[in-house]
Length: 161
Image (cartoon, rainbow, N blue to C red; front, side):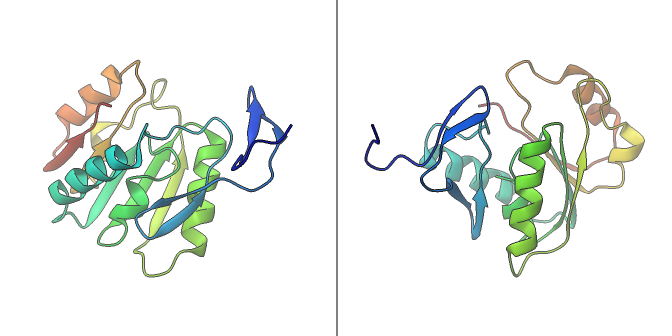
């Protein structure tokens, strides 16, 4: 039985049925999200957080987005700044990369697949940036937070949702 407006049904990351690919807008960029991707509960919450992060990092020229997911912050920040997006989930990072390749008018976005729980960016690596946003999963990011605290990054936006 097909429900009206169903875009995708998946079980444990496996697509059962997908009448249309789910696409979300992160600012001006359309992103086809993979099964299991993390999204905010409401569009209003997503926009409010992105607006606050964008405001805080508005002077940054080169931003690191840690735990970048599908690019909810990275792709918006790329309107004004170069962004290096770091994410451990391959499917989320691939969605971000794909969306960036098809977007226009953005500054350079690079990406790195990295498990930030096992191998956080070091303070020396972070010192290459003048802005940083991190939005870790519920488990937090203690080791990564310690490296951020040791770094010289002048603008840091920490998100907990």
